Amino acid sequence: MENMQKIGILMGGFSSERQVSLKSGDAVEKALSSLGYQVIIIDFDDAKELTEKLRSVNVDCIFNALHGRFGEDGGAQEILDEFEIPYTGSGVRASVLAMDKIASRKIFEQNQIPVPEYKVFNKTTLKSHGLNLEFPLVVKPAKEGSSIGLSIAENPAALFNALKSAFAFDEEIIIEEYIKGREITVGILEDNPLPVIEIVPKNKFYDFQAKYTPGMSDYIVPADLSLDITRFAQETALKAHKLLGCRCFSRVDMMLDSNYRPVVLEVNTIPGFTATSLLPKAAAACGIDFPRLCRMMIVSALKLEFKEFAS
Image 1: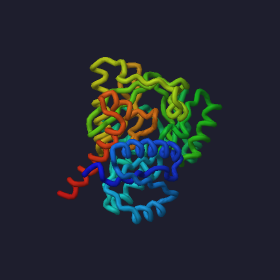
Image 2 (image 1 turned 120 degrees about the vertical axis):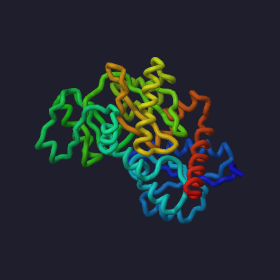
Image 3 (image 1 turned 90 degrees about the vertical axis):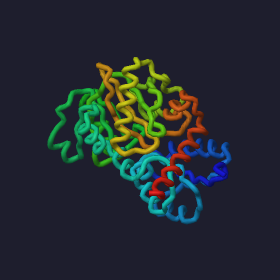
Image 4 (image 1 turned 45 degrees about the vertical axis):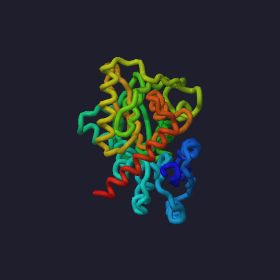
């Protein structure tokens, strides 16, 4: 029977988002246990330890609650594919593309999905080419999530500190225009868009503290937008999800510019599963509680595995 299936939860890991992953994994463990699943926690310090642990466990499916590098960039997915263990979320290629903001933005630009005006730099190109962008500027690592290493620089002095912070997490960084507007996000579940959420942070922008500290942001679900803008945002999010090859679920973060045009910032293949996380909020607005949401992801992963096996 389904409720006797054994589920391994990948959580923790060794990325800069380890603590967030532990919180997500703990929430998923409680949800799946409440439904009668047998749950095995799989935490690890490096890829070798993960491989050893996967050899020693016998699970029907993996719920991937890893955030950040290795968990979201295709590293863990590649190992799971080698073991032929079904897992929740996107496969290797989509994970690689979504985690790499440079690669994903090129795909979006080629397919007429609006993205912020931006430039890519490493330490060498930054010194030799300059910026030619107007302040304020958003500075972020090319391959991080949870707003880690992200800053808004209002002037050249602030830019120096922003660059230092971003380069601490990645060798390539993105410096982009600051879009003054309403911040929204659209969750995708079973390849369909969920209600639009508007994010109203109490900090100047939706930084790490605003994301993970209860009470530091307000969330309007569904967002107070016209039907046309809502549909356009959902269509844009679903198009971004599909262009990267994401499967089952993701979360697409966007800004509404001064013309209420959705501008895509990034696609998250493993959205958070904490008390303040957005995909669960959007699902709840559709009457899908958190345990059911987790179960749907498990069922989708097993169905996908069956289809691949049958083909």
